[in-house]
Amino acid sequence: MATVLIENLTKVFPPTANQPNQVQALGGLNLSITGNVLVAVLGPSGCGKTTLLNIVAGVEQPTSGSVRSVQDGVPAHISYVFQEPRLLPWRTVVNNMIFVQDRKSDRSRREAEFYLSMVGLGDVADLYPSQLSGGMQQRVNIARAFLVNPDILLMDEPFSHLDALTGRSLRDYLQKIWSQTRKTALLVTHDVNEAVELADRIIMMRPGGVIFDDIPVNLPRPRHPSNPDLQFLQNDILRRFDSMEAAVRFGVG
Amino acid sequence: MSDLSIVTPDSVAQLSDREIRRSIRRRWVTRTSILLGWGAFIGIWYILSDIVFRDPRLPSLHLVLQRAGRIIATPGFGSDLGNSVLRLLGGFLLALVISSVLGLLIAYSDWWRNLLQGFLQLIVSIPTIGYAVLALVLFGISPIGPVLTTMLVSIPYITLNVAQGIAGVDRRLIVMSEAFGRTRKQIARDVLLPSSLLSLLSGARLAFAVAWRMELLSEIFASSQGVGFQIRSSFERYDTQAMLAWTVIFVALMLIFEHLVLRQIDRWASHWRSAEPSATR
Image 1 (cartoon, rainbow over the protein chains, first blue to last red):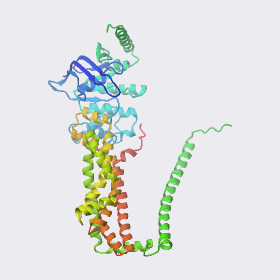
Image 2: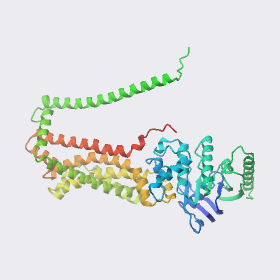
Image 3: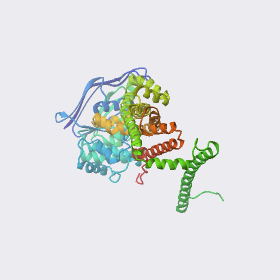
Image 4: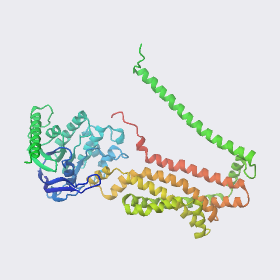
């Protein structure tokens, strides 16, 4: 079983030419995620969500505190769905998939094509990324993350660059593929709809990298945005954010 | 009645016909202008050789070409040409290797950038004849001079292009590769190299154009073999026909190499850029 254990995590960015003061992105964050759940970290832009994800992925170092990602006592295998597709433009779609595989074999291509077909892209394996639409490229991004069979899946606002209709269709693909693989997943988003539609648990963050709320989402899958329970939950979450903002404004947060 | 154009299958077909005609016309204009350019070159040559200077100061083009044919048929031709090409390729390949390392250093380190920038500017600003004379002074009549001078003049062009190519690599692709646990070697081979390959190739083509001129010049001054040496020998005999014939042969060979090898490599390396958008998008 995969676990992500985050203790007293802080990240402070030093002053730069564009930003004369140091910036606290994460302020002593504690979080524990265990099992085959999809956890959404929800918060406004600039509240430290992506920094948190980058530190969990190991591509950024914390100022203090610790992150442990383990699967049955050994370091967990992590993969990432980025905000933008981040595909190598000189490689075909299938070769972009194979690039992230640890062991290349005769089966690599078949495995890559299997995950591409799961996101409805079985027939574009030999095209270059520039030949695909933005939504199709993002589906490759999702398929690539699942291909490496990760213990933990990190997703950084994967639908934020897409129009609403394409974003909704991709969320359906993600729900489908996640339901079949049930990976421990951490999704950061600023979109309340996205969080309630996809997550089993929603962690709410405010600027300064502080968690102010943590709620479970016990709704059956697949979830449709028109479900009244989802809409009720969205309103509840928005109320919680309003209360948090008011509390911060009046110095009680 | 308003003149609104209505999009129908017929109008689309007409439009594509128009497009095809325009494309054919463009191709013919290009071909005609190339032919006109060559025609003008040949015409000017004949005006200069038959009216202004006359043989033997400037022989007619057909005489030069006939002489080139006779030179190619001589037994020693292969050895002279082979020597020149080997020196050129030797110097050029050395420059490619050294420049790739220097380009990496410049792209990743301010210290190296500051150290090498002045040095590279100096190399570019020295006239090529200066190198040829210096090679003669330092190495005498030997193959080392032409190889080293060819290498030296090629280095700045390739280095700066490599550095520019590496500096222009999309950082997000490197972060993606790191997030998926790719090793440094894999990132260098699969991300950095392909990202900067087009810059490297454009620098290499530029450097090659300078390198073969430098090679020829070095041989004129500091060699006892090769095309450059043959040009000097012809000049010393006041045999303008042979001098121009050797030059024409070498230039033709370099142009063929540029078109058949360097441009094809360039086309191969950038084939993904010209991929047509898919009908399924």
